[in-house]
Length: 59
Image 1: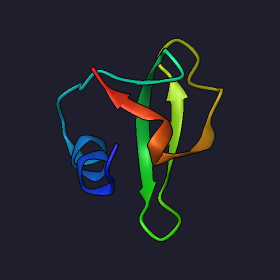
Image 2: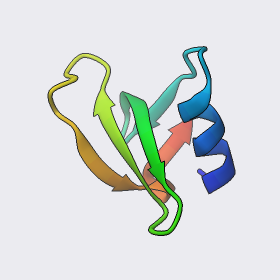
Image 3: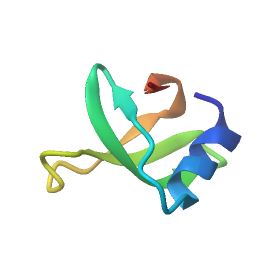
């Protein structure tokens, strides 16, 4: 996923379907400099982690 789109999704009040390695996730924050995103699985909000934007796929 490109950086601009990830930032739009993170800022959007609407829920956009995004997956990371096949798991539906929520994007909390995008780090522009490192091109990473802080995410968590929709069903496990305590499993927060930082991943490369390239691992995110909009459905």
